[in-house]
Structures are given as structure tokens and as C-alpha cells.
Length: 106
Image (cartoon, rainbow, N blue to C red; front, side):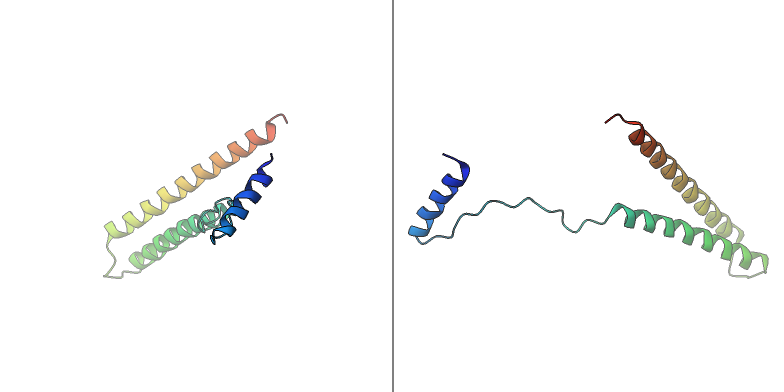
């Protein structure tokens, strides 16, 4: 007896009892999880925004804006630097993984 026969018999039994028909379970789908490419684009945009903010604070400080302090400029600059370095490390790891996959024997 095959799986289809068993499902058909169970279905007939349930229908005769007035219950809903059994259907084959569907594979679970991930709940709207974001794509890797979208996450990577977001990360690149965040790094870009940190760099833009750092540059604008530097320019404002150089122009003598009294609302911008040197510690604020230095912190923004370091945040931009660290986020860029982290992005470069991620890029390097991705390239390394890609090269390893391409060298695999099929």
C-alpha cells in the first residue's frame, strides 16, 4: 500500500465522519526574512551615512560652528573608521568564501 492510498483512505474516513479532508503538509516557508543582498545594501548605506556625518561634522568644526565640539567630531570620525573597517573585513571574508566555493571539486 502506497502513501497515496493511505492518504486517500484516511480522507474517505474523515469525509464519512463529516470532518475536513487530510491534505499533504506543505513545506514551511520562512516568515518574510530579508534577502542577504538587501541586508548587505543596508549595511553599506549605514557605513556611507556614518562617513557623510563625520565629514559634515568636520567641516562644521573647521568653519567654527560653536555647536560642534572637537570630541563630537573625533567620535564621529572614529565611528566612521571602525564601521568602514568592519565592512572591509566582511567583504574580505565573503571573497574568501567565494574563492573556496569556486575551487571545490564537483
